[in-house]
Image (cartoon, rainbow, N blue to C red; front, side, top):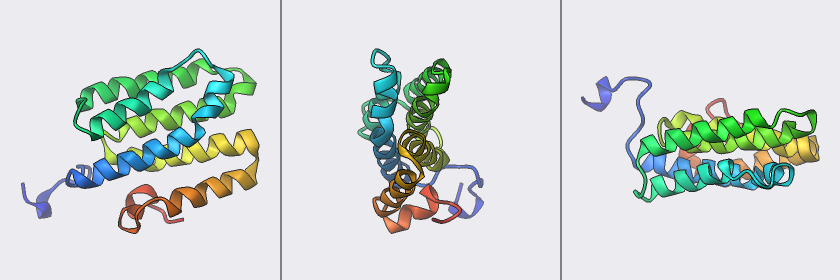
Length: 151
């Protein structure tokens, strides 16, 4: 299938999803401490981030990442108490980052959840600072993937 007839929903060529996966993993990792301080014995979000990094290196199949992403989202659902809202957002960031192995368009959700976790944990100013870090740490040619609606 040529590029001209490639379905709208299909992933771009491999270098793009691999690069955007590393960025999404970094975004999620920056919020991971928020989850871990509330649920220190739950390593599912950390495992999801490790899984997408392993996928990017060619050490893990996409299907294993899908499973790890679902597991991170289960950790988010388990963080149901009111105090755990930021923790749930951090776990969702990890799940979305891991899901980039399946579909690159999960990347903006990873960044958004990570910033949400930071904002809920520390305040709106820190959320804005986190979004600025995300923008600055994404290659300009990849910004349309990580920030499809712009900054």
